[in-house]
Image 1 (cartoon, rainbow, N blue to C red):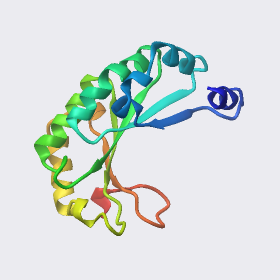
Image 2 (tube, rainbow, N blue to C red):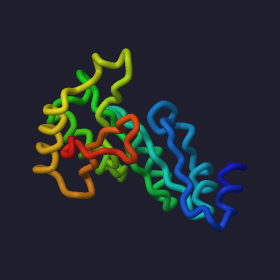
Image 3 (cartoon, one colour):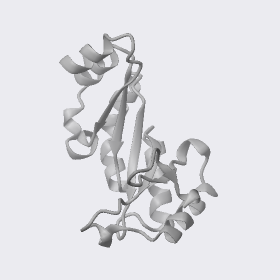
Length: 161
């Protein structure tokens, strides 16, 4: 909390983004007291890395503590072969996140890193998953499907690849 409070005290800092897996890996860590303390500045946003519907369900209760204190909660997801790479699994994940008041923010194409090839989903399949989801859910529940390409100046939407 010392760092959150120090950054929150700076006029030039408008948002403090906390990226965490705690709502998934250690949901008991998100206590009512922690949510209250994090909410004091009005500057904190939480970003949770969630890849499956089961993880979204686990994160739901602890995320509610944050949301109920006025802390926006968003999710980043990595599109992973064999985990969430069917249109139905992704749609279910996005709907589960939205029901838990966790806004789906990004779905990332798995980075082109040595050793991760077996997890990468072909681009054409990723685009089909995005299209399937876009045709079935509203805008608040639809994340941006992007690739975080080495050397790029921004996250690149899949439809530009």
